[in-house]
Length: 216
Image 1 (tube, rainbow, N blue to C red):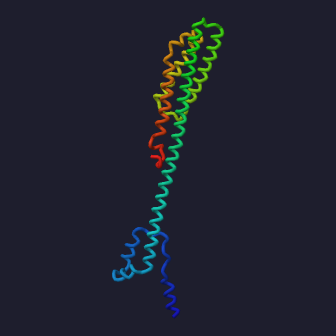
Image 2: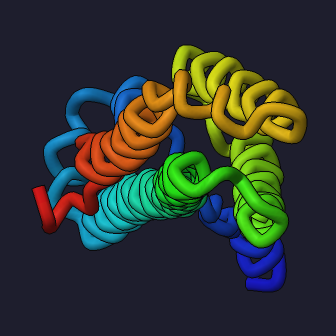
Image 3: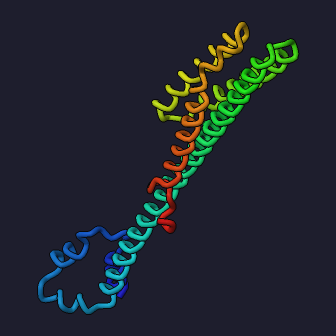
């Protein structure tokens, strides 16, 4: 009797693995005799093992799907934040360009008015104040133009060229304010550049990659 118990102890079934490889069922079928396979198929042990393998595969698929969803969410959040920064940068540049255009137009109006009554000391003082206002806004445009979120190269090059001409006009106006009247075209150019910057902001806002899936 003790000998029988000893044999049973030596042939106890080893614990089942926590993970079932894809070829597990095939390995079981090859390991047993064909005559035993039908009975094994109906056993509770095999049913439990099949259930374990199925649960493992389902869990892996669920985790993989969740990782893909989270990765997509993170990518979209990064893209959306980047778009917000670009939109703000173009809007600021557009507003500053338009403000500069308005200030330069006011300067030209002062010049035209002063020209009519002799350009006296009061006129020159007012012109200097208005020229300083234009210069202040020009510096604000330069700051906005160098925002790292701006990437539309033609717009930036045209802005630089226009700013250089405004600065040259103000410089010449210190000696001969009336000469600024020959550069009325700069008002329209500044306004067009402002509109172009704001249009670029609208373009970025409506790009499909920046629109949430539920909004598409």
